[in-house]
Length: 271
Image 1 (cartoon, rainbow, N blue to C red):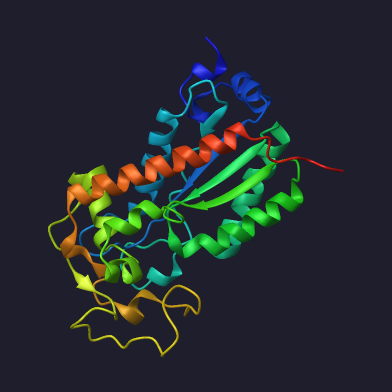
Image 2 (image 1 turned 90 degrees about the vertical axis):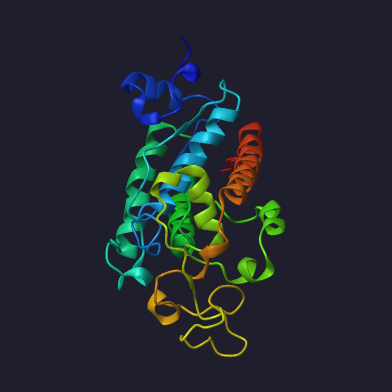
């Protein structure tokens, strides 16, 4: 039995097997990042982690089994101060998340891992993980570090969502609720809030003209600024069929990107 034919979970390998895996040309680890934060009254606290972990597992199932790529245990608690006013949210500090990435990453680089993919599903820590990744790369230049956001760049999803949802569905709305109905329907509650300051009937004030919650001129918003329920979007339009389509688009996108990464020689190390 070859090392690449074993289960694609790095923590399931023995110590000698982990060393063998790390020394393989192009050895790559995917580290799923989620959060433990409110997702309205109908989705679990672990929503982002469920998405990152299940999506990474599905992609690994579809990639060539001979490729030297494995998945690390998920980081379930992340950086979520924007949701702190809602019960159940547990957030780490920014400095702790950066330290975590650096400490784990430097050990992986020392072992001989060639590439580390930070596979993040929580929008509130995109910039933080990009900062941590750049600092890790500076400390361990022999290892490539790729900070990804699972929803970013997946153009196929744009055609699946109405314009309002595409622009303003930021949290626990149509897209996330549909995806959870596809991935783990038993975890979805019956309520379907419509909330967020861009949706009709909201009592929350809108952002100043020219500014937005996300995009070119973003505000560092807290969820309580724009939502009563914790939802930012329209979860009433969610359905399993849409979730299946979103899931298929995400899997196909990341299968393609990770396949191209594995076929490359990145990073090319120069003195």
